Length: 272
Image: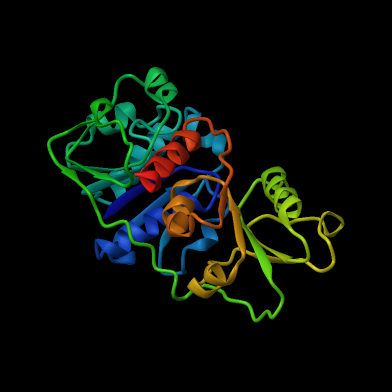
């Protein structure tokens, strides 16, 4: 069995891991996903998903639970999404003692993470998921650069003769509303379509605008939007980079994810 650690509050971590597992042809019945995400229903019924509250991951219960999970399920591969020592450092000793295959899906992290967690475990293989990852902070003998393609063909589209702006942001509500207000500063008569995973009180939305919950955008939905507003998360930048002429990218502060660096690197690439 394969154990996959997926810590993150939004949908981005889950989508990235889903894309990776599909690209590597991992079978759902061979995988156990350990996550804190409240959007764990994102996974189809065939997947073995264990969802725990945030506090569980830094509690004294975590280590014995994880050790027992590894032993009972004969885990031969441990895949870690983003945080090499865990979000709270909870994987450090666990991974040091795990003698079988260890894989890291590496994404941009702020220096504050490595300052807080200087003892980074060794990984048999690191998949570099985006440009800008500081590889000097990581330990491995094998580095792989997977294709950074994101399939949008099966996402949602809308039938609309009215020009529209598109807001894409899963959560939290305060950030979704910030992007919504930003879109209204640009619009003249356009409708605003919001793709989100959070509930938005009706009084915060103009009657002419549309909210779509937990939906994946289609190519046509992106193509037909006059402007697109979003944060600078990993999946979002990957999805919207080709729309830079109409994309308004608004990074948000995160504990360890440096969205401001990601936006700067993206802008540097398109200006070359």
